[in-house]
Length: 284
Image 1 (spheres, helix red, strand yellow):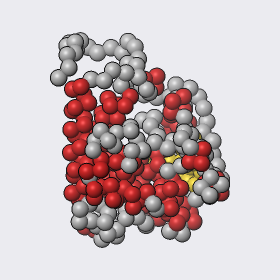
Image 2 (cartoon, one colour):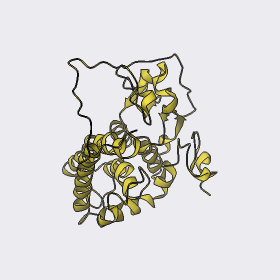
Image 3 (tube, one colour):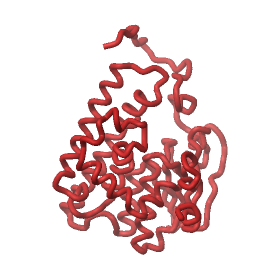
Image 4 (cartoon, helix red, strand yellow):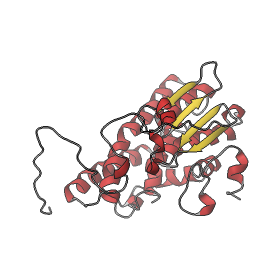
C-alpha cells in the first residue's frame, strides 16, 4: 500500500475549491439552474435531451430498437446537452430533470406533456408506453426489473467510483483504485455467471435490462470506456464478452450509440438526431 498523507475530516465540510480532474468544473454541492435557457423542441412528440455517455445511449438504443420493431410513434428528436459546458444546469433542463443529469425525456404526445428523468425510468416508461422490450409474463417481467434496478444501483460503483479514480482523478490513490476495482470485478463475475446459461440477462428474451447493462458493462469489457479492459482482465469473462459482442452487432445498437456523440471517429458522430436520415448519412 502506498504512503498517503492521512486526512482528518473537518467537523463541518465546506466547499472551498474545485477538486481538480475531469468534470471538476461542473461538480457542485447545490442543485438548481445556474442560467436561463429554453430548450429546443423538434417535430416529434418524443424530445430527448442527452449526450452519448453510457447513461445517454441507453435511451437512444431503446428508441432505435423500437423503430426497428415498427413502432412509428417512437420517432424522436435528440438534442445535444453539452455537460462539460453546463447545459444541464439551464432552467429548461432543470425543469425536466431537477437532478441536472442526462438523459431527460419530454413526451409531448400527451394532453399534459410527461417529463421523465433517470435513464432506467425512461427505459421503463418507453417499454410500458409501447408494450415492447419488457416481458409480458409477470415472473419474467419481475426478473427483468431486478436486473434493470441492479444496473442502476451498481453503476455508481463503476462510473462514479472505478471510472473516476482509475481514469479521471488528478491523483491516483491506490486504496481507492483497489476498492472500486474489487467491486467492479465482482459485478463482472455476477454478470458472467448469469450469462453462462442464458442468451440474455433474463433468458432468451432481449429486454430493457440488456440495454441498460450493456451500455455500461458491455462497453467496459469491449474497452469502449475507461480503456480498462486489460487492467480488469475483461477477456476472462467469456460469457459476458460473448453477450457484449452479440448486442453490439444489433443494428439498433449501432445506430443508438452514435446519437448525441461528439467525439471519436467522424463517422460515429451524430450530435443531434431529428430524422432517421441523420444517422443513415453517417452509418453507410
